Length: 262
Ligand SMILES: Nc1ncnc2c1ncn2[C@@H]1O[C@H](COP(=O)(O)OP(=O)(O)OP(=O)(O)O)[C@@H](O)[C@H]1O
Image (tube, rainbow, N blue to C red; front, side):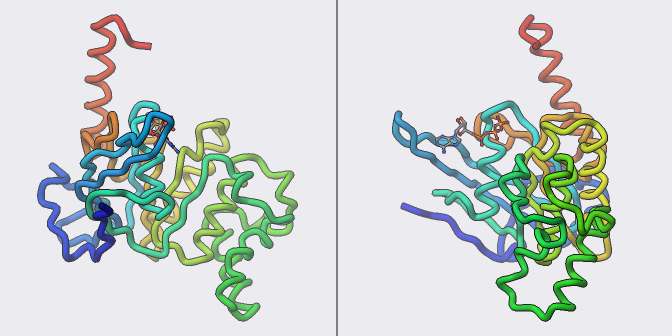
């Protein structure tokens, strides 16, 4: 039986989720994402596999949080559930809207001939006046540091610049929550920093945008306001960056002592 409720954050009690307040959050900070006891199964040739098990977490509005964990632990799956791309079969979830999912490979998302046309593309369904579209496109490109590229053909952009165009598309649609799936995995350091700084800037801007950023790159944790660590389909830690760093360090030390650290 499907038992998932998308509900208003204020109706849920989440006392046990974070052990310490992450940077800048107080008990009164509004919540952008809350997940409680979420379960999700996917079908495979071996039948239904439980991919998410009893996951709970809470992310305050206007913050950048990172989601880490070993390959296959369920990071992309929980992100897709938050985006509404996958349907959980247990638990409760609230994600503020509008929300946007940005994929690892920007070529799946940035498809129009030029930068400004691509950012404007998603606005087509809102039937906005032309000057409103132009203002939104300009503001969104400025927010991610790509306004000088407005007229450029998409195909000459680097991977990181395309990621920033995809994020601008989400901002133009007034997205309040950005769900960002391993954007920097295949980027060089310059592109990685371009995307990280762009996300950091929009999260810290006047309108409260919240971002959840899946990554394997530990150095990116320094840009985050809070972090979540998953293992084997479960959220094992959700709190401060320092907590998660210490947890990862302990895991690495243990593996090293057992002679198994790669
Ligand atoms: N469509 C699917 N059908 C069946 N199983 C799937 C499907 N998609 C993912 N899985 C399985 O679900 C588990 C979690 O996958 P997911 O992609 O969420 O992990 P991840 O933590 O994002 O991994 P990575 O860091 O490698 O990207 C894995 O065991 C994966 O094989």
